[in-house]
Every structure is written in C-alpha cells, then in structure tokens.
Image (cartoon, rainbow, N blue to C red; front, side):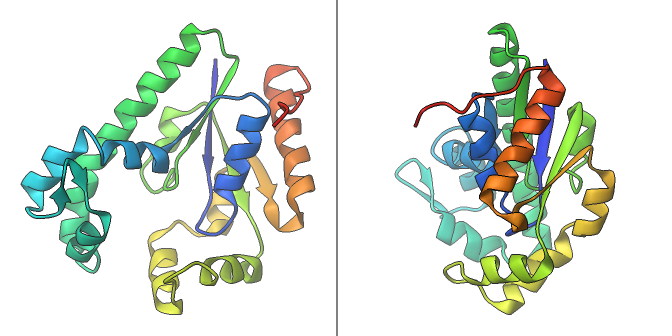
Length: 201
C-alpha cells in the first residue's frame, strides 16, 4: 500500500483536496479530525494534568486551552508533545486497518508535515498550493482571523515555495475546484494504475 502525505500551508485548500481523495474512494486520515476525537477521549486526562482547568465533562475545552497556550511557546510545545504522539498512533492504526483491508493507496492529511518531519513516515508527498493573494483572501475570511494572527501562523510554517520544491506532487487549488479534482484523479491513476471514479454523493 502506498502512503501519500497531504499537506499545505493555511488557506491553501488542503481539507477540500482531502475530501476529493475521499470522494474517489481513497481512505484519508485527517489529523484535525483525529485531534477532535482525542480531545473527547484519550487526550483528556493528559491535557487536564498538564493544563488544569482546561477540560470539562470529559472533553477538552478548546477555547480555554487556546487561552492557556497561545502566545506561550513553551506551553504550546508541551501540548504538542502530548498530542502529536497520539495523532501519530491514530494514523498508524488507520494505515494498518486499510493495509489489512487491501487498499492500494491511503492518504494521511498532515497540516505540519515538513515542520514535524512527517515526510519520513510517508512514501510520497502532495502539496496543496494557491497564489498568495488567494491564500490571504481565504484565511482573512475566516471568523476571528486577523492580519496579525495570519502572519504569526505563516511565520511558523515552512514557506509554500519550499514545500512545493520538496513535494512529489503539487495541486494548485487557485485554478479552481474542477482543475484540482482532475489533478487528484491524475495522482491516483499514476500511483495505482487505475483511473478513479468519484463515488456518488
């Protein structure tokens, strides 16, 4: 089974592209979704022990946790040290299941793939990109996003140009959804030898 890492900077269309792989029948592990699940399960006692008062009713209160770690690099590092191994274990279990089920290809959606050395854990990497103007417009349209927040997030991410250089495949979502969907189908065909057909929604 080929493991394809999917990544891209904020606002590049990674989640939309992950859904396109899924629509073509490729199993996709979504790191963000895994964190949401872990924040209602395994991560709760660990987060409460490290950041008392940030959980309630067996769930991590994301707003309280954000208040505690944002703007505090040491606290953020502590949180990442707790959560990243859990997400990695979740992805490993996901890949084992699909390998056993005979999948030819599986996608692991990793937001900070290059930043965390994730390229070592996948066979090939696809980077989702878009022009800087498109990216800025998409990100600033998000609720609660400001120029300052956007710049801080960008500063923590490997630059888009560098990501594209390191990628095996690049999908430009700035050219429209249909072009992106075709690019996804081309990648699947190249890796599996079969032209995929989208599942009926």
